[in-house]
Image 1 (cartoon, rainbow, N blue to C red):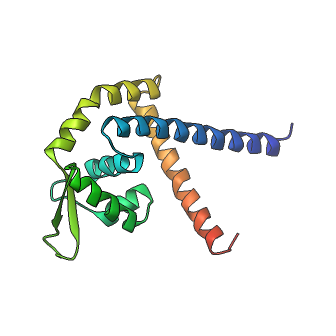
Image 2: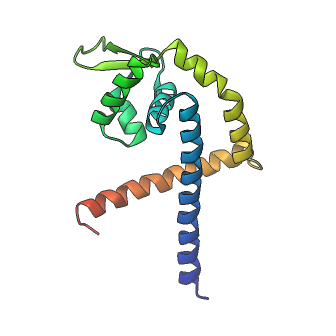
Length: 160
């Protein structure tokens, strides 16, 4: 078996491992969402807001960018989440045309109830990885994600 074939095989294995991980995480998120009476995209929106909010709330554009989804979808879903009392949506202090979103106390309490399950998932998912190994892995994955975005852009404009 030549080196090119081994590298091709390793890349295919890598891609299928990522597909498998994505599929399993999707099922886990779906399960947690259903526990709260939400859809998986709504759950991910809450998680993104929780991750991004450093005090004054988060814009829909920031959430859309984090999740790689269309801002109009975020607007539609966050209005539903506001009705369900999981989100507060307030006009931005910088520009009233935009909305800043933050989790409500209800959302924080519900997410907190799932924290034990999330901690168990994290420890099982990352079993055998210390902090340095996880940091190394995250840096490599971030580099691969950046390269894949570049390749996707090139494909979309017909360069490749």
